[in-house]
Amino acid sequence: MPAGSGFLTALAAAEERGFYLTRSAVDGRDRLYAYRRLPDLPVYVTAGIDRASVLAEWRETLASHLVFGLPATAGLVALTLVALRRTRREGEALAQLRAEILRREASEEQLRQAQKMDAVGRLTGGLAHDFNNLLTIVLGSLELLQRRLTQGDARQHRLLDNAIGGAQRAAALTQRLLAFARRQPLDPKPLDANALVSGMAELLRQTLGEAVRLETVLAGGLWRTFADPNQLESALLNLAVNARDALPESGGRLTIETANAHLDEAYAAARAEVAAGQYVLVAVTDNGAGMTPEVAARAFEPFFTTKEPGRGTGLGLSQVYGFVRQSGGHVAVYSEPGLGTTVKLYLPRHAGPPEGAADAPAAPLAPAAGPATVLVVEDEAAVRAFTVEALRDLGYRVLDADGAATALNLLALHPEIDLLLTDVVMPEVNGRRLADAALLRRPDLPVLFMTGYTRNAIAHNGMLDPGTHLLTKPFTVAQLAAALRARLGGRGRA
Image (cartoon, rainbow, N blue to C red; front, side):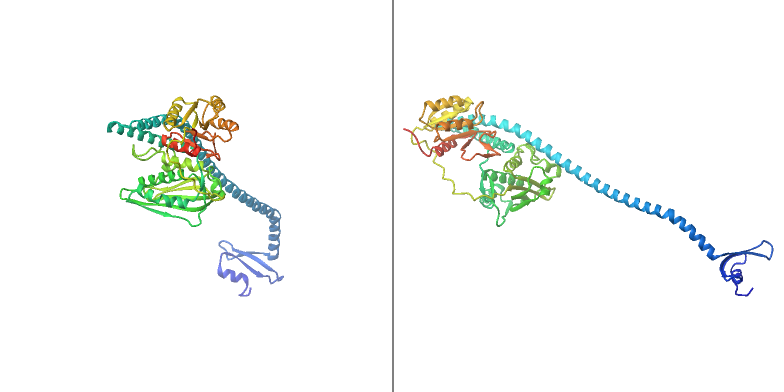
């Protein structure tokens, strides 16, 4: 063999065994050779195979694998892609399901809270009605006694003043219960919240004290809202007092801010009690102690308070909640312990015309020019007796009835009746239906309603019906006189 042959070259690299590729000198084909030395002999055994045969066999084998393996591989790839897509869809569906579960749990919790608040509201509303009748008797009788007790020692007058003061505080507490229960009839007007906040600034400063710095941030171009200004003032005052109590004794800062706000569908969908739309925002913010999430969740519950015993009734925020909800608005609380609290009142935007001329000044609290005749209709005997006594003290002639049937008979028998003063909540025929029947007979007859609980007889959606004049129980003799003089316009009969 030549020295450069493939066998000798391979042998030089590995003496015992090995492989090499070379072109055959016999037929000129490329062959793959293997060689091995026999044990204990200087003899090598070699064998070669045509490289083309090897490649042909490899191609056949590969072709057979491709015929069966390629579709199977493609199928596996396809199945893998389908599984991935399905897994991804199932993951997305699971995430949506979890989000829906959380949303439903939140909605159910809100519904439970709303139902609880409504149940408590119904209870407190019914109790407030009875309390208002009792307080009308107590407060009115004390005032009549005070008017008639022209002489007496100072101790008697002081006792009367204390009793009247206690009855007035009880009346204020009852009004808060009605406000929370959304049974307090509202007298809404187109309202400029900026003007109301500005007008309350001095009162708030006196209430908060010198240690608390009051700031107002009033938005330009603020929309008007449609709300009861007296109730909104009371709500802001309640929020300011609660904020003051949350501040340290060294003082702090309280900010009242107004703004135009739009609550979108996403916000409304997350809160079942609010509708999407445009609102006027009035926010009260303090930098006081703040509330934990557990306390904030119960902030509007009646009688719930974190104050020390004797420092609060737990009805201030409940009154705010009831007023705003009855006005068609929404209340939101944002608070963090140690950082302060923000209470946001969202009142619906009023798109109608602005309020007209200012109300006429109240008539002086004096008896009528002549003995005008008033028909008093009240099913509670004690309330009726006090009202009749008070009207007679004011110089009116009085007829009284315990129900609608007797009242209509008296109207037919006494055409000289100048005014119908009727309770709203009465058995069988309520005050609204009585007034309608009376006005069919006497279209020009002035009607004045009195009530401690409306039950939608003269108010719908919490708002007084147009043209309705209402005297809220409990009332004082001075308030009764003012209401009658306003309805009669100073008219009287000889």
